[in-house]
Length: 216
Image 1: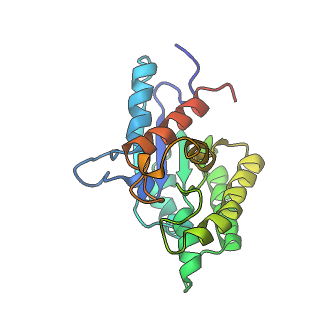
Image 2 (image 1 turned 135 degrees about the vertical axis):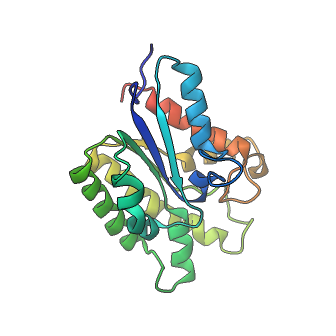
């Protein structure tokens, strides 16, 4: 029934920061109440013939360095058939703050590349990458918002480049939100530029489903 990237009987694992987490360890267990849950619900509605197991391994505040530290336990040992990664905005913000946990664009690229290479060797599963985003046109909502928007393209380009090299699926939420902001206020999608509300998560979930149902 239809074309869908995830096959019947497979396990799909999502990993990332708070945007993936969305309370998945609390009242909204096990998938949270964000785009991960929405993708699972949309897939169930559109592809009733597919019995798919979904795992959410998002943790709020994580950077690519945190993912590296828990990659074996949270990804490799789970052995998913499909993997989605959404990371980057905390890396950028930590870089602006500075300190030993700062993740410069170069450190982000090197660490992310190593994770994908390791995953390719150990699992060889198809991967979906989701670029970082910032729901603002001028950064005026936050004191460092303009700096975030200026630096963000470097992190996005890193993910895009890795997607091309590793042959992954790719979703670009930042472009989608920038288009939406031509017509609507940012408050439609978020209380502040980093964390989407329900409508913002729907934009991401819709983009993920569009990508996963494309011929690609």
